[in-house]
Length: 85
Image (tube, rainbow, N blue to C red):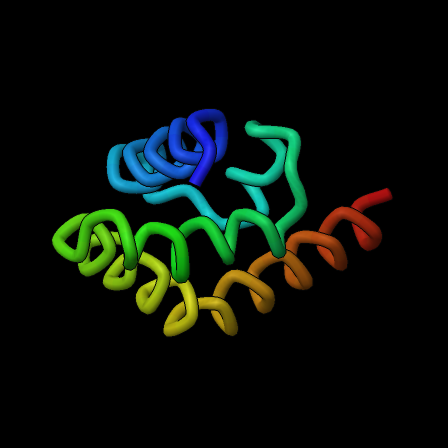
């Protein structure tokens, strides 16, 4: 793995551990696609450091578990804004 990819993987890893940001947020910050972030945090990180991978996997699992709540809240906010206009 090239040095710049390795650095990006580790940067993304520490960012998600410290902030619990979503893959979409990380992709915007590091100016890469969501697919790249997903591959970095699942495949590349697994081959680099299994302990960091487990921490990240726990955060990503949590995001999957609550995604229906986030989607519902954003829809509720959208319609509240439309009704108040």
